[in-house]
Amino acid sequence: MIGSGPPAVDVPGAAPPETRWRSLTTEQGARGALIAAASTVVVVAAASWWILTSETWPAVQRQFFNPENFAESWPAVVSGFWLDVRMFLVAEVAILVFALLLAVIRALRGPAFFPLRAMTVVYIDLMRGIPIILLVLLLGFGIPALDLPGVPRSPLFWGLAALVLSYSAYTAEVYRAGIESVHESQRMSARALGLTQWQALRHVLVPQAVRNVVPALLNGFVSLQKDVALVYILGIREAVREAQIYNARTFNYTGYVAAAVLFLAVSVPVARFTDWYAARDRRRKQAG
Amino acid sequence: MTAVAKLEVRAVSKAFDGKPVLVDVNLAVAEHDVVCLIGSSGSGKSTLLKCIDLLVPIDTGEIILDGRVITARGVDADAVRHGIGIVFQAFNLFPHLTVLDNITLSPRRVHRMERADAEQRARSLLYRFGLVDKEADYPDRLSGGQQQRVAIVRALASQPALMLLDEITSALDPELVAEVLNVVRQLKDDGMTMVIATHEMGFAREVADRVCFLDGGRILEHGPPAEIFTNPQQERTQRFLQRIIEAGRL
Image (cartoon, rainbow over all chains, first blue to last red; front, side, top):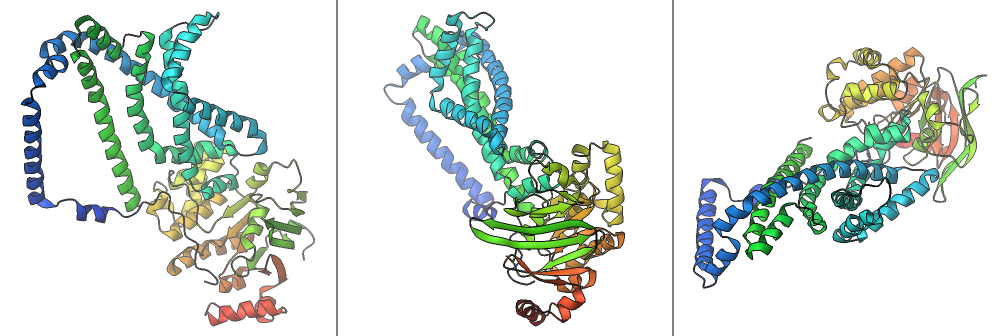
């Protein structure tokens, strides 16, 4: 070959070879596992002893970890949590679709699309810059108060709308990072095959982009799954609201702990799944 | 030069950020002709091909395909590209699609073929180029030579009347070069009109009807391969070929 060597062939998403590094730093074999187990038992036992023997523990237990209060608050908190789950599912679907639309508009090229691109930029800046709780209050109380004909008046609807508007802005940026991570040569190849800009996005760039950002999207799931609780401020009787009602009645905080347990029961598995998925993705890319 | 040109490049210039990459390039390619562009890296070969496929806009001059000025304002670039196949150095297959889906994407989405028809045509092309057992594989399962052959098949699937090959063997291991060049020989035998940017001088000498030597964005010399390779007129062409002979590539 004449001149320079072959230019680097693009390897999409190549990751640094960290498997070897990991195997060197993590304890290996049965002996390592034994040491890890023994060390964990010692630390947990010491911490438990320290907490349970402290003078204030009985008061803490009475206020936060009271089995009777737990059982008493549980049914209402669970039914509230079920509303949280449904709100999460509806909002998440709406977010994934709307955010993708925003990201695709932002990725369109050519001067004709400038106004559309500029609008998405302004939208994303606005929505990311306003605290979600403020949006929830603004839309959830404000719009029903306007009493406009033909506009939904349910605080639940507008509370969810506020979450969707805010989260879409963040999620659109996640998608955009994904689209930009696909090498420019893929776009050029698609255009060279006669695909229009839109077809290139639809069939070539977006499918690859989404794959690249699945872990980041799952991370957003975990976050939203908790943030749906913000609509409690509109008086919607989801888990946190129910716990608050229980607390107001009994002056005991165990209901809040019950709600926390329920949120954890969903978010921890999703977080573990995200880790597992990201690790698998990394391995595949290294193998490929 | 033949009377009716399939492709004509007239006085084309192009600069990137004020740095000229093509300077007053003139080129005519007759139907069924194979033109090889040679010259060192950075001489403008790739840019010229991308300009012809309207992937890179030109600054001045015009490009004429089948008697029509395709660089004029208001020309639908997507429609022009339907008639042109281009293959790149780095294959640029779509990693999320199987070989078959890579090949049928454009026929189905751009040419609105039925899936069954598009797949049938794809399979006959795969069969012809010895890739028939690869249709369900993803590109990362294939060798570089196989990937590049798939990329050629993908370009052929839209039945282009002109093929542009941009250093298609430069990213391949030496032992994989021959299988790709054989595909190009087959295309020549079919009478495909081709413009080929290449560093494979022996191959250029063999398949080209005409060879253009580019230097600093200009076509310094062009003519039949026998003339260019054995009796170059320009001093720069002589030096370029001398270096290649020293490298044992001719």
